Image (cartoon, rainbow, N blue to C red):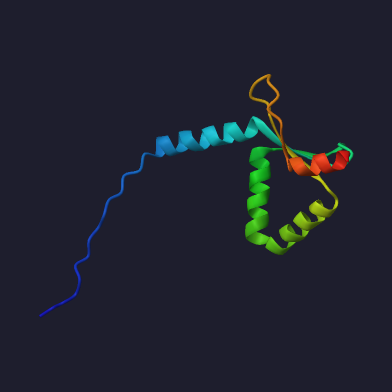
Length: 107
């Protein structure tokens, strides 16, 4: 009696064109937006397309987590503002995070 399990092969079909189209639309969406870092006085320190910011952030989280945490704490104490600006249309789609920080600066 041979109780070895049978080997089976499963074929998985993947629609690579749909995946490629989805990734291209995500990249286009990211390139239509920018991450802008400003100091407490509103002076622009850094401006990156969202795609680049996401890649840098992902690399930071996976390979340099302690450095990423230190930089986040430093940004908090320096009261940096992070803005996500959309260039997709002419309307003002600026999102500023955190809103409470900018309100406390005015007090």
